[in-house]
Length: 324
Image 1: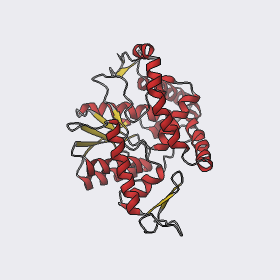
Image 2 (image 1 turned 90 degrees about the vertical axis):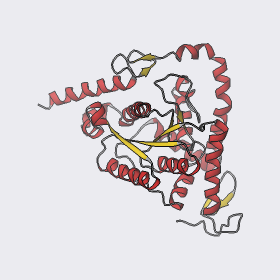
Image 3 (image 1 turned 135 degrees about the vertical axis):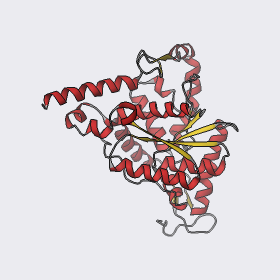
């Protein structure tokens, strides 16, 4: 573990992390306490977990969701169940699934694996290994929509009433800025530690207990406690607005430490005001329909997942015909 040279924690131990916006160094013991306190504070302040909640954890095998499951098991007695999504991304996903299973075995948490291949009839690799399709579509957009669709469906099938996702500080800030750039008020209002605005028996409310922890803090905690997680990044990641926003935010954070925290705080202050202002419109938008194809909840005639699957299959058929 990398040590911050010449820096000492306030407790006198050698530091492993320097928090720029606080101007404070942390040793591994004090950093662990900080991460755990932040995690519990977010849950308590936002009332994310109640005593009798059954919590489904979206476990990818990456650093964030692995920490999320570890801390939930460590501090809460609620019934936990991990949902692992296999998008079919070859060796990368195979390794991350093994890490996820290893952690579940270590913690004694039951899990279920749901695959794109079984649910939708195709894997991400099968679709996006076609270069012509990759030129037309962004893999992250499709993968994200279909993952969320499956997580909600599988969480409901096990009777979970909360779905915990490993969204960290950077993820949340990026989403806030992206929705501002896109002028997407509806999605903007669906952010936050407990983003559910609509109550419906087919929607399992999401919670984000790691929302106020940075990526660096999460990685260091994982290393301190030797929490298994896959370090490699998805091979299908590519250029998108999120990556551009990420670069901008990194530069701002270097120049003005604490920028990311301030953006989240600003969002939390403005969200209730916006909801109040557009209450009538929001109530209209919040009315739930059910997809004519799969019967899952949606605000439109066909849900986004079914629309995307139809488009994917259409493109696959088109290029398959051309290659005959």
